[in-house]
Length: 347
Image (cartoon, one colour):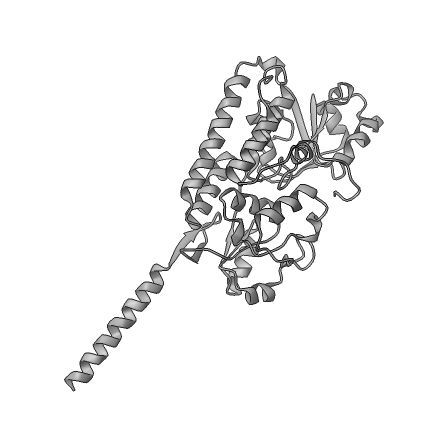
């Protein structure tokens, strides 16, 4: 009887130790929507859903691209540098994007469950909740301003065990913002440029982050109306009233169309030929990618070339990708990123 009781205690103790070991192998994190997510301490299988290049860019910046197992959705296939960088930085990605059809048509949860990723990242909290209900670890990542970018980097850095890389990136971001601000603070208010970033076909500024990088680069954002929603739409007439000094577009196909549009012939930006296209690396720099520090530098140089004569944006671009993504850009790569070429495929 004594021997049986002793064995039982040993088995119970072993069970407790085993459960403790299992618990120690996992940790609970809070995503951007404050939802709890239980994940392993070592994350080796990641899936990004929706705006795949955007989310993946942050993971690449932390040097963890080999953990991504999903491919790019079809709608990104016509973006040359997006595909080139993704193929190089996510070597274990399959051709499957886990999306049923496009960004908002739903997720193939059955296939996701079969491939069993340790965590799924999305920018849609409703999608994250839905996937959690299906038994998947899903986290919602949302960012609109500088502090959100820093928090996301710290979150991902802690999650993937590379917090020092996240801190390095955040320091770089602060350093570049301070550099730009030290110069733009010297520009008289009357010389500040009114800037409008928008998609020409939809007549819409798609993201709140746009107002942040325009302001950070010393410009006056014309889409900033103390809005709290991501999308800001306007009419041709409103743009004429705004009369931007500088216009930045998302699509290189649209530059000549805008210049030829008689409705916009009176705009200062059109008269002075100051219509530009956002650079495009992992994704459009004007959007919510890890390339945001470069977007601020590029924009400052575009807005105030006379104040930023010594800023070499080509060199800054080369250094950023090599330092953070461990990727050496060719001179042609840099040219393609900074001046996207009009094609029939870009949407």
